[in-house]
Length: 123
Image (cartoon, rainbow, N blue to C red; front, side, top):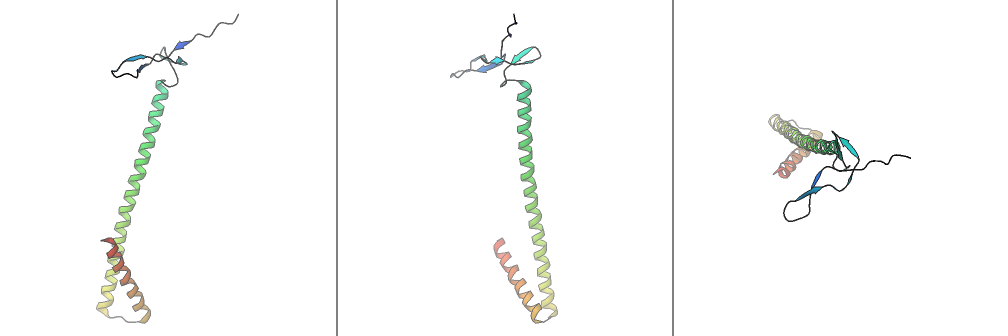
């Protein structure tokens, strides 16, 4: 005759749904043995730790992505300011040297308008 499989109860204490904190032993069957104690799948300490570590890793990855995005925004702002300053220097140089040609004048006029629009949008 085959030996009946021995059933174990989960050893974890769970909080009862009452006004005052009261605890009872988990009513689920223990299916995982750790250090001589039986745990159900919900209270297995190894599974709980792995789930917690996975959540922490996801949280850190999300924060790292947000930090990198913020750093990229700062870098873009700095680069934009540098481009704007260079454009303004070019415009100042053109006015000081009075270099005139139709294509250069048109280009500088467009550049001047772009610089002005950017400055207005940045305020």
